[in-house]
Length: 417
Image (cartoon, rainbow, N blue to C red):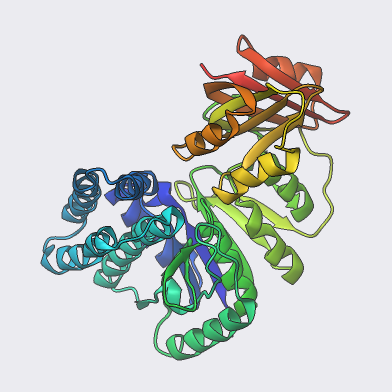
C-alpha cells in the first residue's frame, strides 16, 4: 500500500477560507491513503505560550485562554451552520488547561508541553470535523497514539522502535476503512502518558517521522510560499524560487535559520530517500520545490533572517572566572533556548538567542561574574553563497552590531528596523 504524507502549517489554517481551501486541495490534489498532519491555527502557538508562561509564573491566565477560545469559536461560526457539537469538543479540549493550572508543578517545560500542544488538538479537531462534514472519508488519530518519546519536555527524543510499531498498527487498522488520516504535528507522548513536544516548529518533523515509519512515497509540506525561496519574499525582493534542491543544501539553509523547513525534519527523509515537496496552499496548481538526495546545480545566494532575537555580550569582571564557554552554553541548553550565534573574543563572548522570558534567569546567574550588555530588537542574518552585492542589498541602512565572514558565508547581527 502506497502511503503519502501531507503537512499543513499554521498559516494555511489561519482563516475559515483557508480551511475551506484545504478541503479543495485534498479533494483535487491529495492521494488516497494519505496522512494529513496539521499545525496549530494561525498564531495560536504564540498565544498558548503566553498561557503557559502565566500559569508558571502564577499570573492570571484565564484572559489569555479566552482569546484562544474566541479565535477558534469565531472560526467555527464561519465554517459551520450548526456549531453545537464542535463547540462542545473545543470546550472539552480547553478544560485540560484548568487541570494543568491546578497541578502543583514547577517544571516549566512540562507545563509548556501540556498547554501549547492544545493548539494542535484544537486545529485537528476542527479540520477533521469540517472535512467529514464535506464528505471526506477521514479519521482523526491522536498523535500520542503514534509518536512515543522520552521525557525531554519541549525537545522530546523519539523512541523509534515503539513509534514505528504504533504507526504500523494505526495505519493497518484505519486505512482499510478510510481514505485519509488526520493527526497533529509537534506532539508525542512519554511512557507515563504525559504529552511531549518535539521542539518549536516541530510539525514538519512529525511529517518526517510518520513518513519514515510508514515508508511513505513522499512528503508534501504546504506553505504560504510557492516553494523553497532564496530569501523571504515578504522581506526581500531578490527572492527566487528554487525548483530542485538536495537534502544537504536544505540542511545548510535550515541550520542557518531558514524557517521554511525544521532542521530535524531532514535527516529521516534523507536516510530513507523519501522526496520532500514544498508547495503553495494558495496556488496548489503551481510546481513547488522538490528536495531529494540528488546533488545540486549552482545555487543562487540564499538569505536567512531570524527576527525577535536578543544580542548578549558577556565581559568578565574578574581575572579568574568559574564560568567556562561550555558552562555558559549549557545554561541555555538547560532552558531549552537555542543559541543561534556564539563567538568567543579575547575578553568577551557574543551570543544571539531568541528573545523570551526565560532568558532573565540565565542573565541573573551570569551577572556575578560578567558585565552584561543586552540588546533587544535584533535580527540575525546569514547569507550562503554570498557576494558583496547581495550583502549590500540585504544590509542597506541597518545598524550592524557584529559581522562574521568566510569564503562563501556572511553573517551579521543587526538592529531591526
